Structure formats: C-alpha cells, structure tokens
Length: 375
Image (cartoon, rainbow, N blue to C red; front, side, top):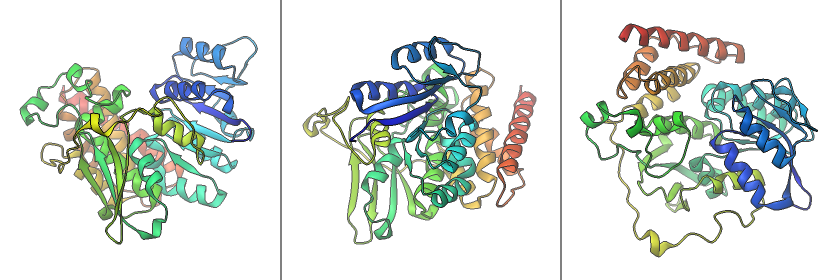
C-alpha cells in the first residue's frame, strides 16, 4: 500500500477485533483507524481509543474519550466514505445492517460476522456485486479458500476442514455430560464463548458451509467437510482436473485477519516465518461423525432449503447456546432444541431484510419459551 489504508472496526473489543488491532500495531504506519465500535466493554474501548487514536468511537453504553468524537449509531461508521475497508468483527445480527449500509456506500468489507451471510447471504452478495464491493472473509476456512482460488470456474469442489472440537474422540455419553468448562476448552483455537460452543457441537462448521455457499457460489453438494484435528490445513479446493490446492499455516487468527484487511497486498506480520513442516510432523484427516454431531446435517438441510430456514437455524441455535452457557440446559440439548424449532418453522422464500429480522425475533422468543418448558 502506497498510502495508509483507512479502516474502521465494528466489534473492536471482541476476540477478532482485539487481534485485528494487534495486527495493525505490528504493521506500523500502514493503517489509519477511522472508527472503533465496541459493545458493553467500555473500559477496553477507552483503552483502545487512547492507544490507537481513531477519529470516532461508538459503544452500546455512553462513553467519552478526550479528543475523539462519539457516534450515536453504527450507520455513521458504515456511511463514512473515508473508510477504505470496514472490519465487521462483532457477533450476532447487529453486524448485518451496517454491512449492507457500507456496501451501499462502496466500502469494502472484511467479514468476520457469520450472521451476515447465514441470515441474508443472497441479499448481501447480490448487493456487493451490484456496488462492486469486495467481501473478504476473515474466518480461517473461507480465507483459505479465497487464497486458493485463482479461476473459480475451474473449481469443482470446496473442502472445509474442521478441528473436531474438544469432543472429537469422546463418546456420546461424554458429550451429554459435558460441563461448560469442558466445552470451552478448545484444543486449537482461542475464540469467543459462543463460537467455541458451536465448535464443540460442530454447528460452527454447519454455519461455515452456508457462508461458503454464499461467498463462492457453490452448490451444497459440492462443499465437503473433513475433520483435521491439527488445524494446519485451513481448507482446500479441488479443480476439475483433480488437482487439490490447500492453504496451510499455524492455527492463529492473526493470519486470516491480516490477509483480509491488507488484501490484495501481503506483509510480514505477527506470525511470519513461524511455520515448520518438520515440527508439525503429521497431518490427520477423517470423515465427520454425523451421528455424534448431527448439527452439520441440519445445516446442510437448512442451506438447501434456503429462505428463512437458515435464519431459523441460526437464531434457535444461538439461543440454545446461550441457555447452555447460563447452565439452563445440557450440551446435547442444543441440537435437540434447534431441530425442534426448525422442524416447526414455516419457511419464507426470498425474504426481505425486515422479514429476516422479524423471523429472527420470533424464533428467538419461541426458543426461549421452549427452553423454559424444559426446565
């Protein structure tokens, strides 16, 4: 980059946001931060603002930092055409509307928010195409595929890897009796609590299948999941001639974050020159056990159904995960609850954004009531 890239981060106080700031700090003077937006962790947001000196800040609760303007909503970030790119690193549906607003203003997106594509992938990707906006995925799996593809018309299959989570080689009884503490002990990745639970149930992989479908335009039958416990091969693609191209690296989110926010350039970063084939020694692969982890099959079904089926899947699962983290239900109940809500959902085809949010709210309420009846 000949000049500083101007960036805003929505979700700067979360796992991805804090690591993104570490990347930006490592890259020195290559970035100018326009805005930082956080949630309820105002103390951390203040520390970030004082250190990185953005022009603007936004928080869910009132906040003030000397010399920095406070915004009243996320749209003010998404509409600011000073931005060259916006990193959408928040979790939940809150990331969807600012992403759409930024696209409408011609601003490229580094996307780390699953809900944006799971809830409204058709709408988001069409709008990005119409406005000529790049959407660069931050998820390690989608980032890997993005790096592998040179000519998408010659690719026959996407291969998404999964670590298998903390219960890969545990029994079904082990999973049924798993505590929150055991579930949050991911063997490879350092992530937020919700996504770590999704990794334990493999729902995270199911959501990634839906994301991959929208990002790269592949049929669900051409998206394969393979379990790879070492998390070194982040994903791969197979070309029509049988060649398979994979992207490999240490299991660190710094690498895909840096790729997304500096694309199409590359620079030495936090994890540069740190990979050693000899130290890795071996790579294992196996098929996922859909009997032990049925969430993946449910995600495939929702994706193929389309419309608000994926909205329902996402909302019901998220509320069930929250209930598990709060100690209200056992881990195995997450799938049972999600499927029960999903099976009773009447799908709306080609929904509007307003309909998507309405379905999301209704499903969350239904799921909470269902969970309360289980107690």
